[in-house]
Length: 92
Image (cartoon, rainbow, N blue to C red; front, side):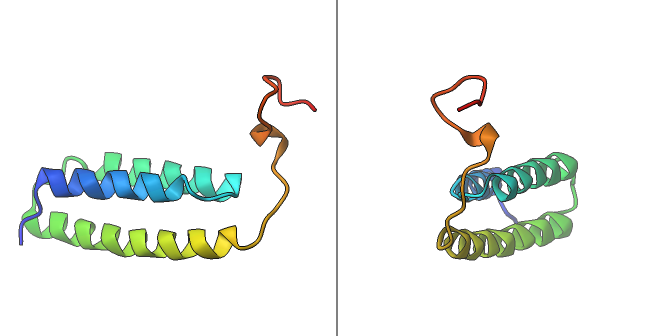
């Protein structure tokens, strides 16, 4: 089962989209950096089996992120100062 470039890009977009749903800044930024890093690191892979393996791992990670976002958003926390909106310098 060879995964097309379109399916892989769709997986990337879905991972980014789901990660942006996290309310907690630290988790959100960690997930976004990790996703971008993993895709950047693996973009030169040519072996079809390795590509399929990475794709399947990505699908599993997407499901984990969806669950974690749902659980994490059940518990609200105060926003960090860098998340404060409406004030350019982040001060209240």
